[in-house]
Amino acid sequence: EKRTRQIVDLTEAQAMNIDRKTRKEIAEEMHSSEVEGTKLAIIGASPITRMLTKVILAMRKQKSETRFYKSEEEALTWLKEES
Image 1 (spheres, rainbow, N blue to C red):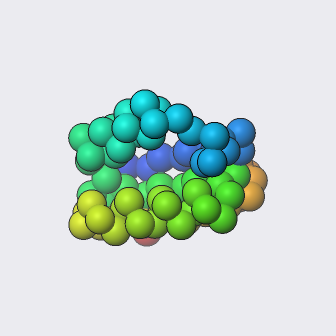
Image 2 (cartoon, rainbow, N blue to C red):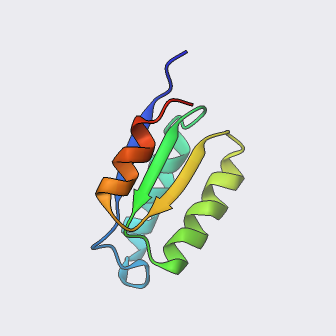
């Protein structure tokens, strides 16, 4: 079974500067997307963004393998690994 693999680049995101409308749009997208079985690599996330991401994913109750990385190269290496 082949798993979906995704990379999310948050290097320029600043969680504290996201307005209410944008937060609502992000939440709606998170609730409508399917993450079950996804291998998700997130790069450049601040500590608060990491925490919020973990909370959102836990609330979804869908199993996905998510890891955080500082560089795209590290993230891509992990995504290419078989699991």
